[in-house]
Image (cartoon, rainbow, N blue to C red; front, side):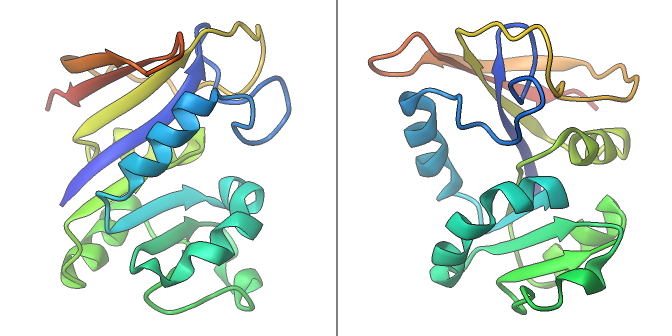
Length: 176
């Protein structure tokens, strides 16, 4: 199972602008790149706060064959949204989530945030790559990519400037 953490961040390292949820602040170039990049994954994992931000948009896409898993302390409170093999809610550990994805013959997983999910998967040693869009913005405050103290060593895979923008995508391999 290939696990890739995908995130857009400001130059000063925040994935949200101040206390506003979501990445509506990200450039059009990143939004397009992100949508295209997600097509190569057959599963996605996100936190409940991320799900709350994208819920309405996500409902339109649920028939695309991608399994989306929302990590939450209270999966039963999302019973009305649950759709087996399409949109599922769990309080399981990252290792257990990946194990069930592998049993379901899923091959690639995109981690879509937030920082709690990033921390959990990184600390468990389950992230293979990190793809960061660095947006030419400075916020001074917001949600960081990770919130728990870690020491992850990364190896540069590649980088690219997104067309018609000042945004950079930097891809790293997590050294194990």
